[in-house]
Structure formats: C-alpha cells, structure tokens
Image (cartoon, rainbow, N blue to C red):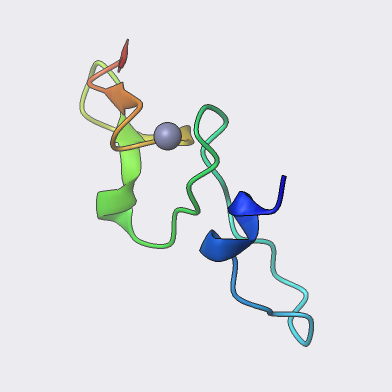
Amino acid sequence: MDEKSEFEPEISTENTVDPHCMSCGMPMRTDEEYGTNTDGSRCDDYCMHCMVKGERK
Ligand SMILES: [Zn+2]
C-alpha cells in the first residue's frame, strides 16, 4: 500500500499538483515522461511507458 510513496517527494509547501499517469501512477514532470497521442502530441493522462502514439501499453 505504501509503495507509491517512493515516487512522491514531499511537496506540502507547494500548491501545484504533479500529474500522474492514470495507469501506473508514475509522476510526470517532463515532456519526455508524458505519453504521446496518435498524432504525436503530448498525452496528459498517461506516461511514456503506458501510452505510445495513442496505443496503450
Ligand atoms: Zn504509466
């Protein structure tokens, strides 16, 4: 249950919420970590491992 905490640094002083992959929960902080849509644009919902050119991995 606590495994997820390894990926999340404590940022209680900031109001910003880091986007997380809806599939694996990986935090996405850089463009490279985001998945890509079929047209090559950035997919905000999934990471690079779970969404490659619109295809769920
Ligand atoms: Zn993912």
